[in-house]
Length: 442
Image (cartoon, rainbow, N blue to C red; front, top):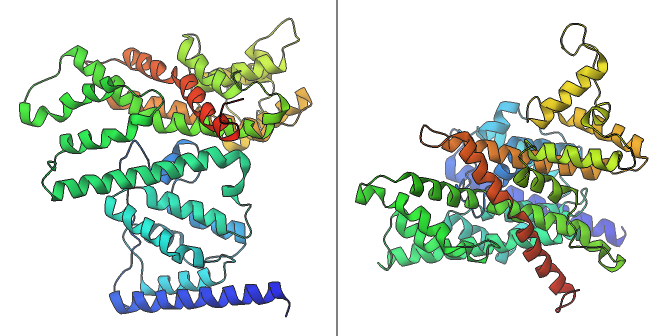
């Protein structure tokens, strides 16, 4: 047996030992007649949303069931439990027999479990659970990417380094401050109220690129209502909504700009102009600053149009719409031509209606690539998913706060104002990364 084979055999033996111990532990604690459920933290944190909430926004993994399906697909190892059991494992619980199948399946995965048993990692997970933070699932997911043999190691991908560092920083910071707040309540130094918790946790956002004390001053009146029994004026309500919107988008603007910067860093020594806004930033900024742009996806479609037809005298979305694949059975007005169907569909996309499926979007981008004779479909697909995610956040925010006292036009103006700060997020995060390369900057 060569050294590699011996190493793999030893790792398999260790994994089996760990999983067998887990199997017996579950059996002794709950028996064979009770249901077993995997519990997790689902904190409504602005500072660190749940992994699956972020996945839902950007069209990625949004449930534990989808994660199990992905592991099956990536490792080509089928998990012999029903679709309903995959769901109930994290909800109402499953039988001991299902747990036994899950453990046997885990033994067949080429994943080293030892890093998950590392003392430092276990301490972080315990602290995260005690703090009621979403950090645990983020840390577990990142470690899973790191040890997965059949997957590329996302944690060591240079372009993702700024994003990974940002997520880890938020995990560490939120857990530390939440545990500190819990301890202060125990010692009687802080009241266990929403307002008391808020006054402590606002420290989290002090390193935000657009931090302002007024953001937190505008939110405190709402948290004081139960004790002061007063209503907000129109001015106070709008100020609260704007501050809430800032917190609503902060994490996502950080994620987007760190990801964007990460894509550019490998070109650092190729005289890339980091100060110039790229397609992603331009698309979101267009929605934020141009009233004619109805969504961030609309802004991106305009950027694609400008790029494809930059040398043409006549431009327009009708030319871009011809890259849309229209199926023969697709509905339309009687007598409507193919080009009219394509054009009307693009107009819907710009307004955020009848958005394309992944399959339809990929076909559109591949047709775009064929026209420009350049392969950027993978990058533009990611960019599309990001801007469509931002549009989803905007729509959710408007639906949450729209009322007789605050109309959609006012709420759109608020979201545009917050999204207009994205260049500042980019500037601050870019400086952080460039200072790591050269302490004085480029």
